[in-house]
View (cartoon, rainbow, N blue to C red):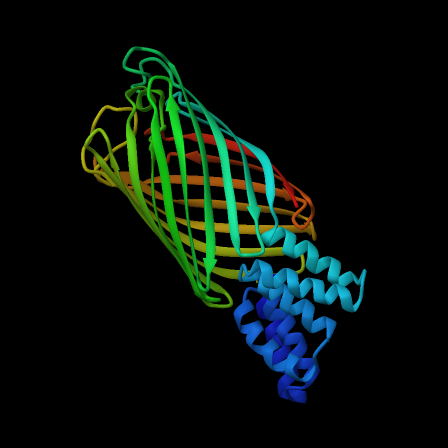
Length: 399
């Protein structure tokens, strides 16, 4: 529904110009804003409407949707229960219940991913996890991850002993709490490569003061498990990440993300993403976005410890992102980027490209299945390779 917001708002504005801001106009506007990515604005409108129409099920349902969108778990469930008591079994109530479960419900399930590149590096991850939501806006989450790493002997990514494989096991648990516009949380855990053990942690703060703006900062520690060599050396990392997500208009969005990490081999790495996008088309079954991606990363030192560490790497591309809505519960998203890339060794930019696809089944259902895959060509990856493929499957049960 969020992708459809602009045409609906334009239609409503035309209605208001011809017939005025009637009660029907105000109700429909609140419903569209609640479902279209402007929930805080919808709640302000609903406060005025409900003062004159208490006990109105349609307004209660719009409020439920808006409260779920701003992550107010307890308030959303209470609003949903109020709507259900007014008209048990109502189709709109069932739809709102599905949305609340999708956005705020507890989940449990496994995921698996694989990665392979032209340097001969192969990575497989298996990650069962859980996320439990409470009406106090508290969430309890945790999981376990098993990582298998394999490299070609002679690539520089194998262990210094000559072994071509390594494994890393990680377990963690944590809490998060929403407090007004802030959500704060953290995790503690343990990571175990084959010959080492490390206590890990993470902490984050997310800030959402308006419908059009969110920001987050986080700090985390753990093993830097890019290759068997890194795992075998027991290289650890302490990372910092910040992100800003701004939607200044109904058709535009800007995401900026930056990170910096210190590694235990006395190196440090940094990375920056800047991704402005614009909506090109919004139809019943197809959304189409066009954007740019500006990506840079680098390291302070160039070592031989099993990861790519240039002084600076640059990749700039045009990105086309169609999303096909096969039905209410099935969607397929595609992203394709084409641009130029270089590192500090090369003077000239060379063409580079990437593409990914993700299919989602059961968007609003109790069972959710996601299948995704991606390819890169002539674009530097963490290992230093120019070509890579990856994919994965996630299965979740919602409660």
